[in-house]
Image 1 (cartoon, rainbow, N blue to C red):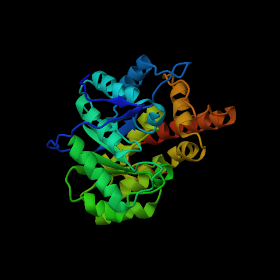
Image 2 (cartoon, rainbow, N blue to C red):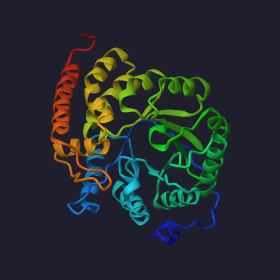
Image 3 (tube, rainbow, N blue to C red):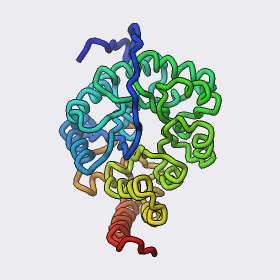
Length: 330
């Protein structure tokens, strides 16, 4: 690993940044934020991580997000996060693009993670609002432009006010979208009005679905990508919905498929155990997942049963819809 990372009192110390030219990014398809499998002692299971990556690429996932929220980046040490970038790049071996999740509290640390993502071979970075400080749009723009200057990679803006405490507002988008490096936005607010606003006022930003239970709405409004946490265990069904709506343009069938998927997405979004649910879904498929790191705790049996039943019913329904003769409607 290049000697670019400096640990000081458990935090990252920023070096001198070097501005580089940003390559073009076309953000389309299903991008799965990969879980981080854990062993019984809550250490990272690297073999399991490689298995997950191979599984996702093998089922046709178009790209991966490494070090995102679903990957429990908030619970990993800086050293673990950087090592994960490099290990993932080695396993992926150029077969699909991957995006580095670089969020942290301090701008300097976000810049450093962005630099490390580029050094590891990331195709782009995923940039969210720094948590806790609640910056305004002007401050967020300055933060984002500093990260852009640091790494020179395409940037996917990640709007998730439910976790960050604030959102990337219209003023922020107006400021940064003049810069071609800001390629796309993963919209996870759950606010349909924001889907409309982005589609109408910022058509040059590639809009990506970041709320699994709103995938159909995003596709109707022109999104051509979906950062899909459920893709860790529900990838075939999510790819089917994407191909039906975006590739084939069949929103009649797409609506039926989405209706079948919604009970699963509802459990994920409202259960209060999002990462735990995703990991349990992987476990049901015989994939390595393990426990979650503190402060999160395992999910209860009742929620496991609800999720398992929803997955089985959804898969049966989607298979039936897909197998119907073309043109047949319910």
